[in-house]
Image (cartoon, rainbow, N blue to C red; front, side):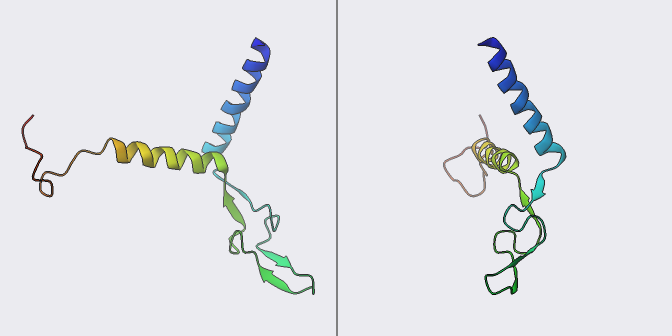
Length: 89
């Protein structure tokens, strides 16, 4: 039980380090080419990555969402726009 927990913790820590070092990964749909072949052998720009060839990793996207939520929840109120807030504690 403890060994499985340690392995899961190491796996999560490794993925967190990977997301910090390389936040972008090759697109899975076009395999990092930026274009796809259609059924009629026409070359089209990949819709998923829009031809950029890279996608944002899921872990980094979750990190960005968590950072935005924390920033929105800890923001100090602006005294000029809110008349209910007094400038003194």
